[in-house]
Image (cartoon, rainbow, N blue to C red; front, top):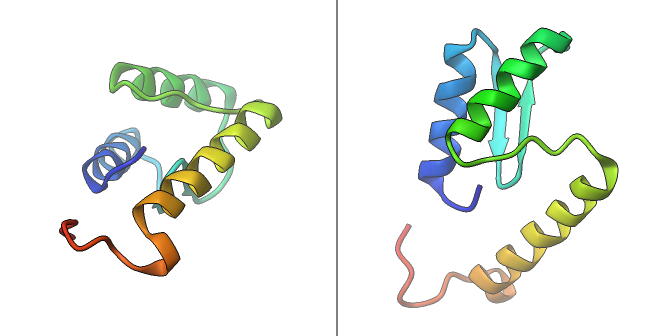
Length: 87
């Protein structure tokens, strides 16, 4: 997830599944409680339908975290937005 629209889509889709979404950040979602295997399968399917993937493998997760750090570094060089970037 690299934009606010992507985060909104993920939040909306997970809430439609009945999940209580606590936080949606770039490449990461936190929901209240634990997920059953059935719910996890539904989450995986709804993410795939919207062009996302569920990363439940530790190596994949680490790679995604590195991507997020690089994207944030490019987007917000030294903590500042680029002049031509809007909110």
